[in-house]
Length: 375
Image (cartoon, rainbow, N blue to C red; front, side, top):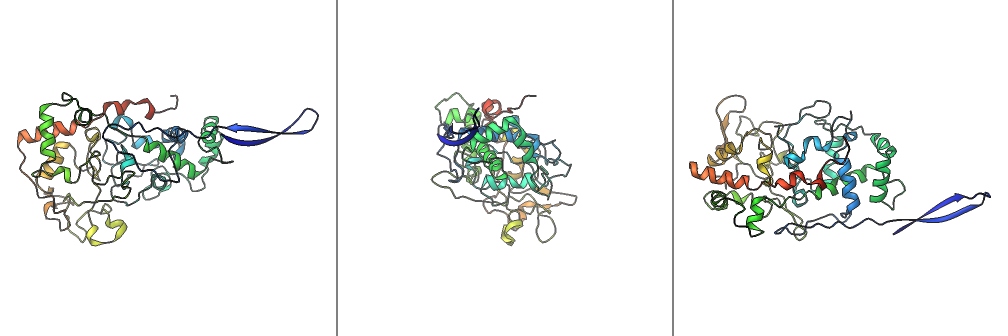
C-alpha cells in the first residue's frame, strides 16, 4: 500500500493532516497457454493488472487521434486477431500508409515490432503511429493537448491513479505508452485447434488433412518452418530467457528495375541501415491467426493464402507487366533458403488446412481484450 498525505481544514479552522492509502498495483498473472514460455518484459515497465486495464481503454479511445476519429483499434481489430484486412489503412486525416498494419497477436514474443524497423520496445513504437508524420497515422499534436482531455475524464482519473499510484501527475505521454504496451503484451493467443492438438493432446482437434499439412510445413522440401518455426511460428521470437532476436528476409517479392530492386518507399531494413545487403529484407511475422487478415506481405500485395503458396512455390514472385514488373526469384538479395518447390493440388489443400488450424476463435471474442467503452 502507498501512503498519500492529505491536508484538510477542520471546522474550527485548524489544519488536519491525515493519511490516505492507495493500493499498490497488482502483478499481472499471465496464465500462459501450454507450450508457451515466460515472456520478456522490460524491467522499467513491469506488467500489472491496472496498467493493462488502462491500456485497454486507451487502445480503443479515439481521443488518441488528431481529429478524434481514429483509435489504435481502427487498424488492429480484435475480430481480425488485432490485424486488418486491407492492404494499407489511411490515417486519421486520410494519408495513405505505405505498409499493411501488422497484427499484434503475441507481440510480447516479437523481437522486432514492424516489418523492417529494428525497434524492439513497444513503449517507443507507440510514438510512431501517435505522433509520426511520414505518413500521418493518429495525427496527435506535439503539444500533447490530448492529455488535457484524458486528465479531465473521471474514468481516466481513476485508471491512471490506480496504474501509477506513486506519481502526482500520472497522465503523461510516457505513461500512456507504458499502458498501451502493457495491454498489447497481454494479447496472447494460444488456443487454436492446432494448439489443442499439438500442445493439449486432443488428437481430434484438427483434421487428418491438416496433420498432413503440418508435416509438409515443417519438412525439408517445403521448409516453411525455417522462417516460421517454434511455438509462435516466427524466427523473430523472443522469450524471458532469450530476449534478443531480430531476423529479416528478402523473399523475392519484387525485382524491379533500379538500384534497390524493390519499389520505394518499401525497401525493407535498408531504410534504417543503409546497407545494400539489407535491401528488401522484412520480418517473417507470426502465422498465428494468419487466415484472419488478408491480404498478405508488407504491402498487402498478395491477396490470398493460395497466392502466398504460389509465391513460395515459385521461389519468388513474377510480375509480368506494369511499374513493378520483374522476376522476383532473381532478386540479388533473395534469401538462399527460398528455392521453390513443387506444389500438388493435395499438398496445397493440406497446407491451407494447417494454416487455417492456427485460427484461435476464442482470442477474437475474449472480453478481456474487447472495447471497454459504452457505445
